[in-house]
Image (cartoon, rainbow, N blue to C red; front, side, top):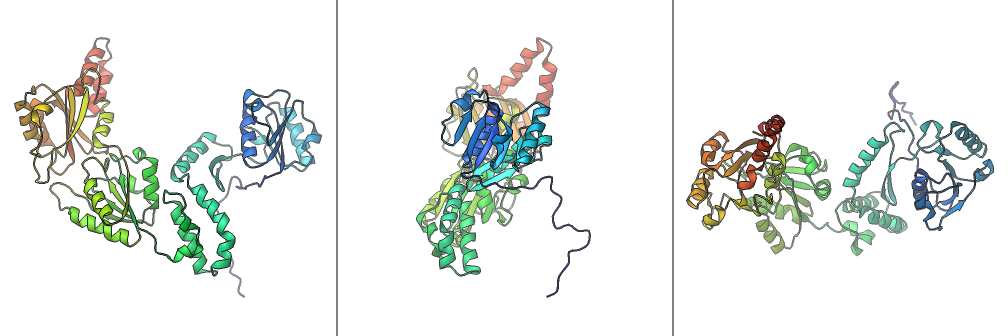
Length: 483
């Protein structure tokens, strides 16, 4: 047999600051020296791992004193080197350098791995941040350099791993022997484990059929998830939305969905643009429906990714009705709708209690392309209700005319905004008397909303109040940045 040598000077793995290792502590004795809060948290981790924890401390914190003595025993005395004999691990909460050196010497004599809490220079091993989906356990270490950064990494991993992953891992452990007996090595076993792994990220708990090793031969059931992509910023996605993107086989996305949102999707997922935009060639709703149905019938997990919230003027009702009629499982993940994103970007409350007692979302684009014929303009002309008109670029002049005919004064505050939530957001603030002229500066192809009502003037009033104490400059600068 010919031996293939690695290329010279080329390491197979980049240097590691520490080696990640997982201790099996079930039923093993672990010694903890110290009874303060730092030690109490380490004791919780050790007990959760099944260790028999012996604590040596003259004083203990309230949390530790109240802990049930199931797998933890507390000796109210100072530790001795003999206490470390036979232990699997030794952990100490020690601040004095001399005592820390004594502890390390005793641990080395007893051949016990040691850790002095929050003192990396006195540690043979370290605790990392943990993501717990036991028996799946993820450990994160920064080698003691940046614990807060490690916690930030942990939070992001927590977001991606569903809680049901633990159930799937437990099922895998339970089935391992049966799979080895019933399925031939190679393709059959691999197909089973790959299918189980895919289902583990499908945002559901295991079902009885999943426990049958023969289920790998059965075609997977297709489904559709309608996901709200929010206003564009990826960090505004819900955790559930990210998990849906991570488990998708195919993503049908709107033209308004940002690239940074799509970057969070599973790399292997096929991405298909099905956007509908004014003044541009668009994909017909019937074609989108047919595409979802065909892909789901092929056993795919189809994510229909819509900007904003899928249930606000997103034709989700039609899509859900069609899919349910055809027997396709469908679920919805909400997102932040454009009106709320606009309110946040301007720092304006749409329901400020001094200015507006309700808020209404209104479509400015009917099936025929113009304003819906069923709108009650006298009701919409109430300035004490904040009204937000979606898809309003072409119809805005007519909206203004209808509102003024209904009794709304031309000095009523309003906002025109396009591409809300993106780096190219365009915003104009003024009164409805000037809005018809102002909207001419907005491209017809840009997604535009029109918000009207007394609540939209609140920041202007605040700026006036600040002027009285000489602080208006900062307020004016913030407003100008949105214009």
